[in-house]
Amino acid sequence: MTRIATPQSPPVESLREDFERAAEAAGGAVDLHLALAGKPVRIRFAGARTAEALSPAFAHLVALDGPPALTLHVWDSGIRGSETTGAGASYYSKQDGVRSLHQPASGVFSVLDADADTGWFWMPDAHGLPYWDYTAPFRHLLGWWLDAQGLRQVHGGAVGTEEGGVLLVGPGGSGKSTTALSILRDQRLRYAGDDYVAVGSAHVPAVHSIYCSGKVHQRDLHRLLHLEPALADGIRPDEKAVFYVEQAFPGRSIAGFPLRAIVVPRVTDRRAARALPGTRAEALAALAPSTIFQLHPPARDALAWMAGLVRRVPTFVLELGSDAETIPAALLRILER
Amino acid sequence: MTTRLRVNSPNVIYETIEGEVILIDLKTGTYYSLRDSGAAVWQAIEQGAGEDGIAAALRSRYDASEEEIRDAVRRLLDELEHEGLVRAEEGEAAPAAPASGNGAGRLPFAAPVLEKHTDMQDLILLDPVHEVGAQGWPHPAPPDETTA
Image (cartoon, rainbow over the protein chains, first blue to last red):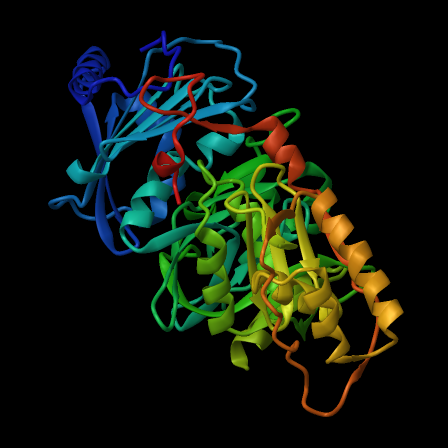
């Protein structure tokens, strides 16, 4: 599996053999059972070391074992110190219902056999992935699978309560993460993600959390001082500070909620945050391009799907101020409308 | 035979929402928006209109001289072609339906503006996705194999 020069899918049988061999060498498979978008998903890691690297992002979705709707097999080859930049061209193919993605820059190879409800994820070193991969593991595999379930993975954060929540949309740097993470100081709101969530297409759409990881740029840490204890040993040079909400703030993450509004955060020079009615076009422009270009491959029907979503819920602009403590109250006011 | 305009599909995708058109060029990562008279021009392009038909549709909606509207339409069409969002082709142009207005007489005219956003281009440049067919790279997938 270390010599993947073409994007062609290896035969599934050879993936299975590679995984079994890796699991045996690593002391056996470690199963993680999740309820993702209400469906049972099993992730089989080859050994505890691999599980340790990529499980924490799913800690809030752990469920009892049962017959899975999807099984992912995850292994590495223990190629320590492999230099990966994480960015670079990717190669995608879809043949006979099997989707494959090879990302040479990080060495990751993802294969989904949708008919068999089975996925395969190989990487050089489970502890060598860039932070945007280990905080959102198997993003492409899960995105393809969610698609087949009538759901969409979108680029956005989400926070709310059991009764309903908001989708936070916008490109990187627009204030999505700051807004999502600010709610951890307010017990009334819970966290469903700061970057990628799944959204259903029902008349009243639902948001489903995928990852409980949180990432914050070091320059924004002074605005989110309540996160400091959680980040005590989680800051690596040249990376965003990373933590897992389920570990650091037990009970504050949430598996999902009905979508009540789409919110476009905007950094302003105000002091206190405030929400204003927004236009649907503004929400679509904030949601669609960054979602579409982070999907592999970009899905041509995704714009129409997202336009349909934006038409079904109210939209707001959330003007962020210098005082991040005022953000949760502004969000709660949106949910109370 | 006249010249008509066609949306540059499948690379260009678009949606109209509350009168504003959001356009995305999947090849370059650039996205755009058109409002008001610009959205009216796009609506006429969707209907297969040529330049004359587009100008006529706008004249039925906006209060401006024929020359002013024609110049503004020409400038926008040049820009849309330059950006690769539409292409001209030979063929019978369809007459554009009058641009939908508010029913309260003609509106004041402001020249259409194509808003252009390039913040996604870095993503495309840093992490392009090549869709490949059964023969593997560098043979691209035929159009019917790519994700629609």
